[in-house]
Amino acid sequence: MSTTTPTTADAPSADLQAVHAFYATLLTRPAGLTKAQLYAVLSEDYVSVPTPPMGPGAEGMFATLQYFAEVVPDLTWEPREIIPHGNRYTVRGTATGTPVGPFFGVDPATGKRFEIMSIDILTVEDGRVVHAYHLEDWTGAIAQLTAA
Image (cartoon, rainbow, N blue to C red; front, side):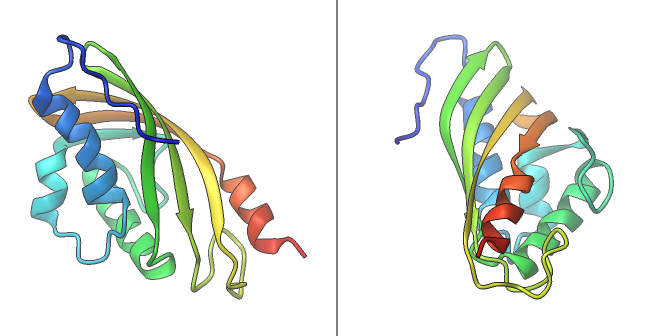
């Protein structure tokens, strides 16, 4: 499947660029991510629902991404479909990766790769993501990693 990029007049290009950067800059292979890069994509008062595993806000997101960089160094997150609604974007995505360490209770690492779907609703203001509702199929990832 390919990414569907909206071409609607109500989707400001800076906002859509922020949505793409959320996946390409932050979520895909986050090793080496700097706080300057993080804050180029997220607002200082960024809110994530549910809260990232390593804590709330942009700082919690940064710590969570550092964890993912260590445990799933080949993590990729690809938007498959982006649906704009004013300054809100519903994104159907796919995450893939191969954990190299303990991951959501799977310990030791199995060497297996996972592929899961995610659904995000991102709100963008002034070219930065200010709010994210998100669901990821982590149960599916665990099942794939532990399958015989």
